[in-house]
Image 1 (cartoon, helix red, strand yellow):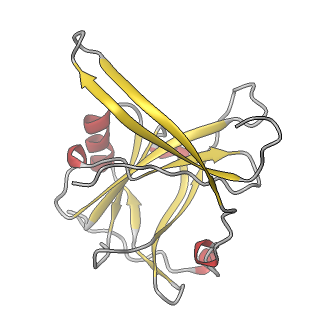
Image 2: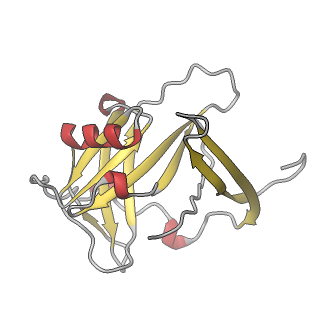
Length: 191
């Protein structure tokens, strides 16, 4: 993004080739990263919900849960707090009920490898379109020498009897010690 540029940018990573097994045990990936100028994220529908700290987090999930969500690159002990809300049309929040779950963590690690923190979700959204608000506090551990170090946390989610092995990446959190708004985008095909 050259010197002197400012503002916000939408970054999209598009996979052009993804071939596994040649040579054996290797993944060959060719991707294109595109940058497009974006408006400053000040859309009022994307503002911090009023009274989020006082919002009811929802009921505890039963098992099997209505949904499950995973945070990648972290362990369950790295997640200090996590609440998931459905944002209603009037802007209010409905708690979906989230709880750490060892079985969900194990399924995530089996599906994707690496470290994951898995959570059971008590309520599933209804309808084809919905907005979710995740209120997450991570223990941010940084030993890097960069002036603004960051931690990338992928998020996957499944509802009902869906399995994580059948799901795409939902989104990515870029945890960074900064006061600026950091907006990320993931573009994936839909099946």
